[in-house]
Length: 178
Image (cartoon, rainbow, N blue to C red; front, side, top):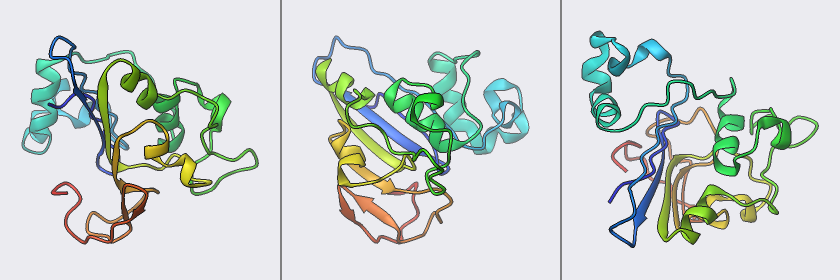
């Protein structure tokens, strides 16, 4: 049962499954470096072969036409996870840190914890890139039952710099296949 899906390397996936079948499934796509006209569901049929699955999911769901994101990937991702604007958690990329730091304040509630309280199981697959000052800042400590993916940006789809849970998982399988 898929519900919350967030894309970010080329994909960062958050999956939420429901324990109560009356609860709706939620499927959200957050894509780095994807422009409005890069997807077929906004009219670019040239890219239909590349964005066919995203287009089908969008056509069967709800498209947020006026949802805005920060121009960097990590502040946008941290905002989605915490529900707070980049002003509150840093506008810097996770790999650069900046003077304020970029880790998520561990006192904050996250979408992972909120979804769990609502009866969902939560899974995060793909790109993290939210700031990892300690193991407590990793996805499984932020309310996600499972994590598999990268901790930083600009990773190779075949690269071995992956994590599973809170330990390294040096697979060289193509990231979307994992």
